[in-house]
Image (cartoon, rainbow, N blue to C red):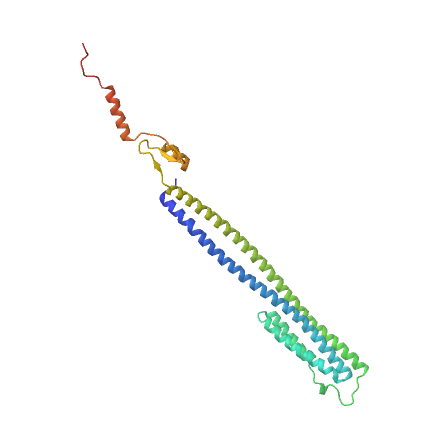
Length: 274
């Protein structure tokens, strides 16, 4: 049987451990919720960046096509869609810089893309054609080839940025899955620990409840009343607590028994009758 001190230690441990485990579970839920929000925001931001890369590429194609059309024909109707596409490219790159401010590789890609746009797509309509100049077949071929080359270079930069963003998304998703698995394992361990501690508390409370019950003892025979029956003390301890009892004699009972034996064996001093 455990000592009284051990019982107290087990009792307070059984009460305090579930509280600590519940606090740990609360912290774990809060941490998991924060990780989920961060992952969700990162995924949404990544898909937004990927969409903007595709929009930027579309705007670059529009700008180059209208630029080439103006170079080949000199018609003013190409300038308005060209200028609209260039404004869209500027807005796209500005927004992409904000969204990827914590990514040095994407910042480098955007800087290179802006440099290529400024060098290859920006032009002054007033200086393109000399008065009375007419495009020749050679100039048409040259402008067309140059336009194709410019688009390929810019698409290569956008493709590289797109692939890097996809890789970052894959790595983040893998890290998020690992965090979820570890959080689930920790939650399972805490749940099992709390369940065991609660079982321990219930057992201790049941034993305390049994110990706090009033016990009725016969004042004459010393028997104990248990579930409507009168039992000897050893029977009661056996049924109620599972305690096996051994019998012996106290010193007082042994002295009393010895005196009675001596009185029985003492010779009779009275003379025999006539």
